[in-house]
Image 1: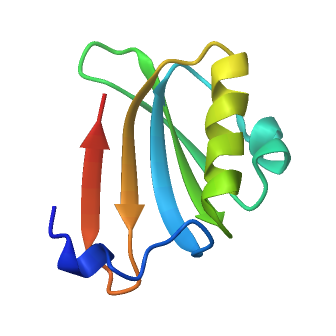
Image 2 (image 1 turned 45 degrees about the vertical axis):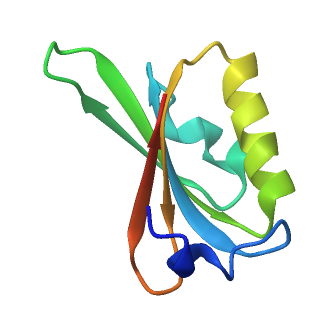
Image 3 (image 1 turned 90 degrees about the vertical axis):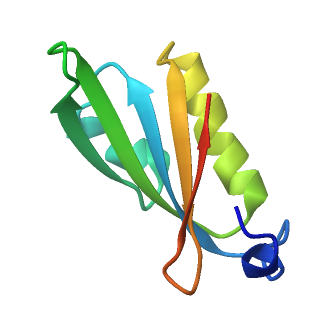
Length: 93
C-alpha cells in the first residue's frame, strides 16, 4: 500500500469501503448499515459471501458497521478502501 496516496485519509475523512463477510445478509439489512449497498455472491465452494459497499463519513462510522457485522456473527475476511483518486487498497484478515 502506498503511504503517499493515503496522506489525506484521516479519522474524520469521508471514504468508500467495501467490506466482505462470510455468510448471507439480505437486502432488508441495508438500512441498518446506512448508505451501504449489499450484494450476495457465492465463494468457490458455494458458500454465501456478503459484500457491503459503504459510503462513510468518518472512521467512527466504519467502526460502527464492523461492530454491527460482529453482532450478527458474520466473519469478516476483507476490507477494501477506495480512496478519492479511485485507487484500491486491500487489507485482509
